[in-house]
Image 1: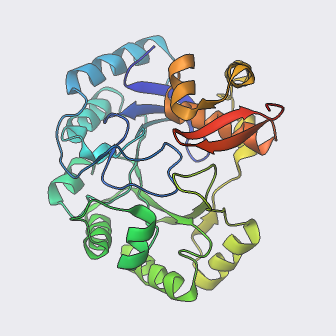
Image 2: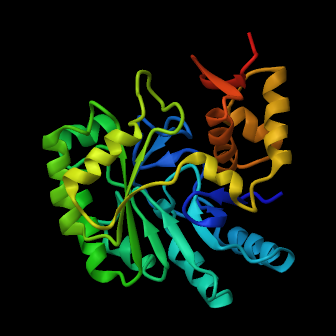
Image 3: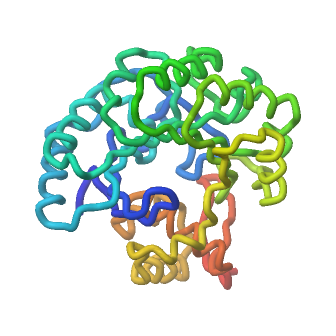
Length: 313
């Protein structure tokens, strides 16, 4: 059991992805209303060595010595990876020791207006930032940022990074109907996308319950209408959850362990992670499949969203 590595998890976009967690749960610069990992408990833009560099590289050496190489090594987790001030050192270590394994960064992109952050991640092969709004009011409604982050700086940071970075950028935009899908909001997003010039634009929507009530996912038809409105040739709707089952890293024993646990009592995401000894991100991948298959249901309570078997109660 590793403390800072997780997976490989069945990723919709990266195949077998070995996750590297560089900040504790839930240290982030945003407190997004749709986050399936729960509310941000430390809303900050303070960069420091949240997870010790030496500990991360020791786990990486141990994993790579004893396991097959993953398709990707991915900086992700249940927080914002670029808040770790030594992300660049970890990236350098990976590229020096395993140059043939591509490195991806899953990031909200909110710190890209800082030149030092951009410089530290230039060696990544793939960067997947998010952008959910291009107006300040909608940005605050959806992403609830640390108070010093403005949408203007956010977008400019992505523009600057595109100019400096030689790898691939896949920009993810999560659509929440009635919040960021009006013609005005979509036009502002389109203008921002043109300036950022990513290699791909990936449309996503709510997968499981977020941190607030009354959010609904966009359906395929609504997402297709947005694609038609933007009329970019590099836009795609992110593949549906059930496709994870076809990946060789999808494990039936993990699915069964989750089902057996919640058949005895409802559990939050954090509960399942602690009980099963599985990282939150890995648990999330399986919950998506189970919910889509109709095997589990959710129940929001004061302590958060509880997952329970379909027959519970």
